[in-house]
Length: 432
Image (cartoon, rainbow, N blue to C red; front, side, top):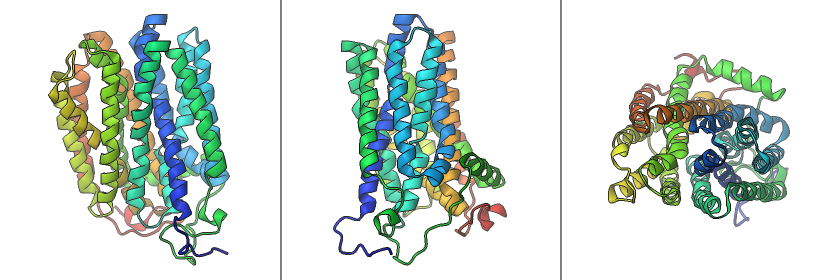
């Protein structure tokens, strides 16, 4: 019997959101450090930037491709169990890097293990937690949880840069492994799978409101069937295409190559990492604000504005690099930070509008496209750097792609928000 929660000062959903935020902070932190490892690994082992970038690309690719399957696994086995397992994979992948002697081992550790682990705590995890625990304030909570990615970068990237510079990259890797284990303990003790586990309704839901029907069964089959059905809806391809460009212009290019690009222009690695951390600071504000706006403004308009502004900013970035931090670079960092993952809350909202109860798994596939774009650009930018000696072509190309994402966003049609049952998409979506 689900009890009322009016007498509770804090609804349990907010505690679940807080623990999910910490897990997301950890996942983002574990993902963000390859940028500061790139030059030390190159110097110690002599591996080309393109080889190291390939490991980062696999990490980014799995970070996305794991998401829809992880969302389906959470339906079958529960959020807590899947998240704890993911954190153990991250700890193993990061810890084992200290024994590396060949580049393929970097691919296995940072590419495979850390990619699978962090992918299970990707933004599909945000969608799952929000959809299960919240009815009211979904846009705002989505924004706050997404901001966990920025916070992780903010906390760990400067720390990792200092650890690498003062103690070596191995100490940084072991620090990440220990942090992953600590977060795993917290998740195991606090996180719960559904409101009914604590005898409450979701935040903003009536006690008698039934829970959404979720498709159960083999998680791989569920994820693939959902992809098959979503692929029949034009909105899915527009969202996936735009989000692929989002990933290319953030995680794939800026997060991976900003530090080495700044270093090419004489900027110290710690200073460049600090600028990325500042992006993280403003990303928190930008993403929370975007979540709040998503509850009030047409998400298609928001996406178009975000992608346009991002593209224009990338066109000017190559002229801003210098040995020291100039005012124009600070302005870029602040602006890019506000826009970094502001695209997530409106994209989640559009997935709910078009795909109903299956939105979390569908968003997992949309997020997979985000990481496909990120992985592709991470590798391409490494090749550009090796062939031309700088990253200018990569920045300009990403700017053009962002303008294409603007066109995708304004092409998504509005549909009636008809809930879908497992095995089908919304009727309005399917008709378009």
